Length: 156
Image (cartoon, rainbow, N blue to C red; front, side):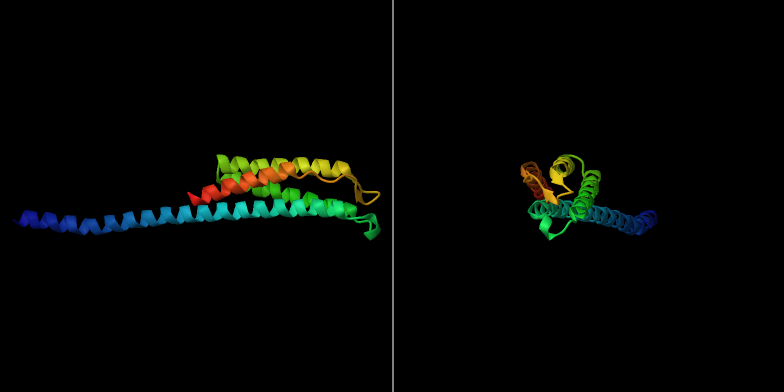
């Protein structure tokens, strides 16, 4: 009988630390998952905002007329800054999440890159005008696909 009592005491004393360690490990994993989800959400939001800001800037550049001033060079510089922001945020999303969400973020950055090339080619800095209306179809489609992927990601 004393052997059984001693065995029960040892077992009882070891269960509490094991349970505490298990709880600590579960909590740490939960915290990592929460932090990862927050980082992905922030990166997605930043990418979407930067791409929409860039789209608005390109549209505003086209609506801008030389009689308002000659700062088209500065306006294009702002477009390039926004392009860099989009590229960084797309890379953040892709580094945090591979697969459809990361691929979609990369697609947004690629569409922005092509829009920038076309915008620069169609801008007459010396005249202070955008000579041709920008085509946002590819950017809009890539943003819609990205938004859909992000919504699906966070619903699951």
